[in-house]
Image (cartoon, rainbow, N blue to C red; front, side, top):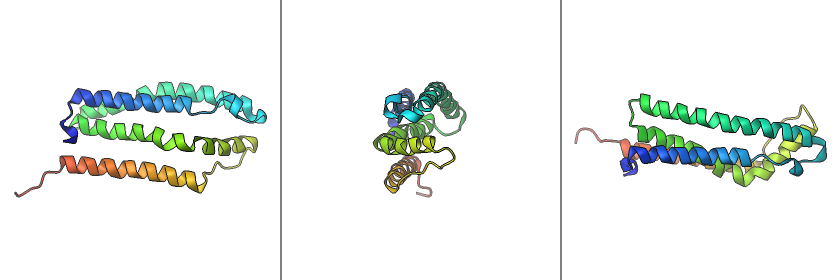
Length: 151
């Protein structure tokens, strides 16, 4: 049932998931006005670099997934489904804890050499969302592609 969607639709779904991830990574970084005055220049520099990295890196990642879908012996919808889950789960995992992450990031910029750490709530949220995405997508692929033998 899951993979009864036509191949072309899975390509569109993968492209939409890539666009959502790119938009998240371009929109996610804070603007210089959100940062403390002491680190605004560093935040602006890192934001420009990150924007270029997201805009140039996502098409490369999408092309790699597309080539993998074409080369692998598995059907393309399975690979594209897994890619879409991975790309789509990143915005869901990062947007709710955005402010918490950047508070730690700003603190690290103000005191170089310190580590960026996540608080328990952020770490639990990231682990929960990404772990659920991994388990659910694995279960979906296994249930859709499993064929009992000997019957």
